Length: 330
Picture 1 (cartoon, helix red, strand yellow):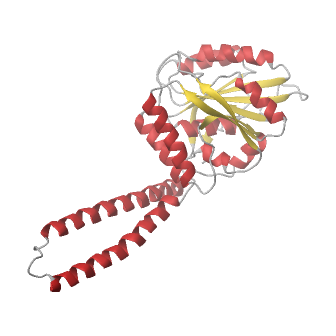
Picture 2 (cartoon, helix red, strand yellow; picture 1 turned 180 degrees about the vertical axis):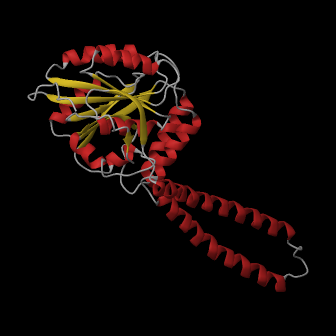
């Protein structure tokens, strides 16, 4: 491993940027960050790009950047798309900084806020995260996101920050704590918020993507929402148990009600075919719902037990990593 090239008097800040088909944004993002770094000359910086097996020219462009700026840019390309959260966590694990900042390559989160994050970090905050007061997107999607954040917070055993994404700064000690987490489907927003330490949110308006299109489909967003709810709460299981506790005595009451009515009103009560069908449909629906909730938890247990690598690095352009460190443990 090569010797660090930064001054020991200066703190090193790592900026982790996950990439998936961002060829239209890479050069602009790098140029904007260079301007910012020039203003923050009291710090040293490193850029860590984690490429989730892009199919465009993203990796070739990142290689060129690294060759031109070997002391600043570090690039890791995965063998396949391991997902957004795994990409961020791998970047965290590769970071050498005293503080680590996550920033998306599309610059919807303003990089100039990193200066504000650093000020709060110097004042003793271990986690500084962005709180989105407004997003430049359609009304339905914005309201759906807000609903998810509030639902996840309601179901969680510990409070989660509302309207906060992955745009954040974490102290080195947070990363050291994350090394003890072994999660096959990590949800970093919840994991970091539930660690404790001194945390604070900074409000901002999220911009519209300048180039390209979002890599998050409805399926991806739904999967992320499920991770957020199920990874940090057993409340859905408790709700399933509560439904069972409520439905069982009600079914007993209905049974005795029909039993008594059979003798008191035997001449006027119809055969009951419709009632039986309705009760069967309701019962099947409830069973499917409750088994689905249990199945989601069992699926996560199954993935956790398999203990597969979090990510596998296929190629890397980095002067600070060992050659054999191509597998990131879960």
